[in-house]
Length: 319
Length: 319
Image (cartoon, rainbow over all chains, first blue to last red; front, side):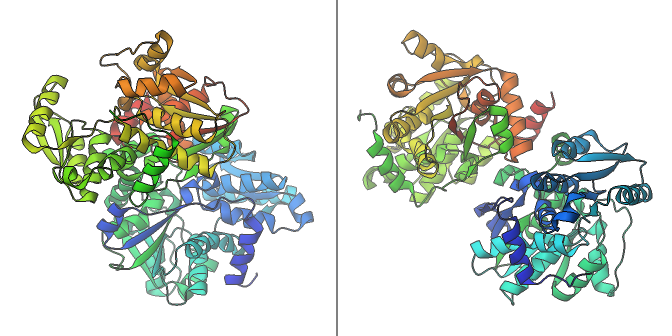
């Protein structure tokens, strides 16, 4: 297994994917600043290709493969943003992408992955079935698995969002990002501490999916199984690689309630006119609740993605 | 009455309001390009202050007043984006803003205008009552009325959005903007033809509110009374000043159906992750329907605003 990426690895990833990713804009909002009591700079990764930062990591992994390995294709069993990201990155490199997906996956997810040209392989529902199907696929094709977060190439790619944010906004005191499997938080922490050693790196997660908080508190990696949170992108628990990086570089994990996540999502849609998914609202919730301890500071936030079913979002925000 | 603004007047407006307006970003979308069969550059005025281009015109009018007149304040009976825009511009100049509003106006509209510090004066519902209340107010205060579109200072301010778009995106062949009272279309036409004489200026309006199309077709200003369209920002008919400018500088008015407007709004929310109001979706609808005759061209579009009740918008898009 390769060493954990450092700032140089993130810079290298940035160069590798520069021609493919969007350099997303950074937004400010006087209303958000007022509510947060801080100067907030929001990096809009909801406007990234495939609608999420996930494309950065997938692109770095796909484009760092040697030609012979790449020719056999890449594979994943993620049917969410990572699946779409792998599919698009593979298409851009001109290699096959295999996405294993349960046959009862929502039509919208299947359509998103199919849209980017992936070869979808149906399996029975359940993580076990998905993993077995992926193993069989790899045995048959020789494709490279690209894990959604427990992969140093992916982590280095995710760190490029923070790299861009820190290049664009001088003097940030803290970075706030959501934590699911920890790929974005790991990459952000490496980029952040590498460029600005004194910067505070704060991960934010739903209290109902607080495996990262538990892991950092107890000092051992805790798995929270099938957590019940609206932030569907944050249901994964930390991996071994991301836990090691987060333990070393992250200052704090802050937790927010479900109602605060929904309120933050509504705030960003209504006031900032940006469609974000619930996961992306999680760090904003910490700011609006004053839970991040960043009053008076200059704070960078990564709005991680914007893929959401509009009607489902309506139902959430109507309550 | 002053002469119609020219390019120099729009440049002057741009300088006057530069410190107050946001220079909004321009977005592209490969999915939009594919559907439109054109290269499309979207100027995101939904991200402008108060959530709409209207702030440009209001700011230009407010900041061009001589000190003695300004001290008596400004007034309008618009309770929509223009009302909020006048309120904020006045607050930034430190002068009173009076907004006449029927006592049964939706609470959200009242709250938006109140948020920017305007002095709200309630009146009975109906245009007649609003105009009388405004007249009484002016008699009592000496405030300057700022009309939402039939005002050359406002028109010049609205033209600054196209000025920025044309400065940022070279070689545009056409500009598409929505038409309500015609302030945005007038300012866009003056800026567009002034900078790029051969550029096509295309106004787009709901077929159910097609006063501009009727006016240009018949050669006389037609008023469509209380049109029934989801594009609530486009229910006004052209004014005398805007009609004169549009007759002279606009190449074409294109009309779109209600269902196409809703579909375009959904497209921008889902695919481009931007919250826009129905009025802003109107030119996008013309592109998605292939109704604008711009296949193969480089096209600029002004996404005019993003102020929408989330529940109402989602209910629209659910149908």
